Image (cartoon, rainbow, N blue to C red; front, side, top):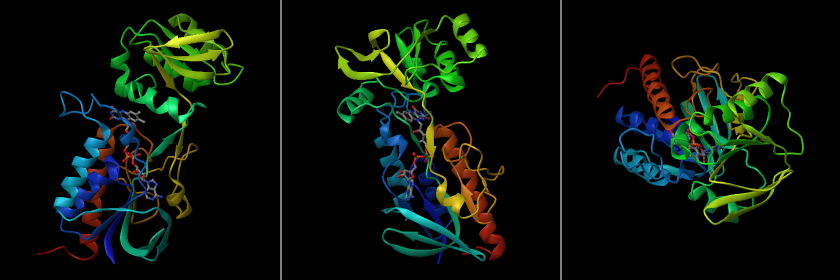
Amino acid sequence: MDDCIIVGAGPAGLTAAIYLARFHLSIRLFDSGSSRAAMIPCTRNHAGYPEGIRGTDLLALMGKQAAKYGAHREQTKVTAIVPEGDTFRITTDSGAFEARTVLLATGVVNHRPHILPDVHDPALERGLIRYCPICDGYEVTDKRVAVIGTGDHGTREALFLRGYTRDVTLISPEAEHLLNDACAGKLDEAGIVRVQGPCGGWAIEGEQLALDTARGRMWFDSVYPALGSRIRSHLAIAAGARANDEGCLEVDDHQRTSVPGLFAAGDVVKGLDQISHAMGEAGVAATTIRNLLSERQPIRR
Ligand SMILES: Cc1cc2nc3c(=O)[nH]c(=O)nc-3n(C[C@H](O)[C@H](O)[C@H](O)COP(=O)(O)OP(=O)(O)OC[C@H]3O[C@@H](n4cnc5c(N)ncnc54)[C@H](O)[C@@H]3O)c2cc1C
């Protein structure tokens, strides 16, 4: 029986692994290998790296730090978490395990526009497609930018990016924009151009990303999809944890879900979807897990 099983080895799960291993607890760290952080060509807003750092390099450094204290990432997908009294039974692709506590750090998956991977992936690498204005809006300062989206979400993202550049176009993913008067008014007031989709014909052309819209072919320095995310909270919800309407797990200020002994941290929890936030939540979760276990049975050397 392990003290804690961590599901997910992104920034949240790896931070928790470092803390928990250094608390002298027995842990396992299961990961299916699709961290959002691995998609980051170079993060420049994560403190401590003045020249920026590639997402995979940051994950590798964190993994190395966790391994130094005995926490090794195991490549496997967790398929069920079942509370059994004070403990949990965790089923994975490679077998079943028991743990006193579980930390879910499974993150989210961004919805993408219909772009073939052989265009999407090089465009992401070159910053022609971006998913996180908070992270990298600075990099599009005074550039020509499009947001693929509509409604409140698309409007919010376009207005946010207007803080970096005058040249923002909001393109509906499908044929019609779904904008109420309030959204339309704010977009007009900010000088944000509205174009209808459907979007198609994506290609890298020169230094820009090109796509077809109802207004013909258009070219942009960067395109931000604002199409929402799939929250990977289903394992916790099936175990009885409460989530909001979007599927983000509800936690208290110690990262406890509504299921005793089941914790959550990072993007899977409602909050700022950022590396720093994921790490902070994981530190809080790990310390609370340590103290909970110590209450049940004092941790002594
Ligand atoms: C293109 C892009 C650029 C970004 N740039 C920045 C930036 O510059 N700065 C910044 O702060 N943030 C940035 N972000 C956001 C940042 O990547 C996330 O906030 C961060 O990765 C969240 O960490 P996490 O640990 O919660 O989730 P993730 O990093 O997504 O990790 C979750 C892990 O859980 C695993 N998992 C999921 N389900 C299971 C399962 N059933 N069994 C086993 N494992 C499972 C996944 O495989 C994954 O490895 C960016 C995101 C994107 C997409």
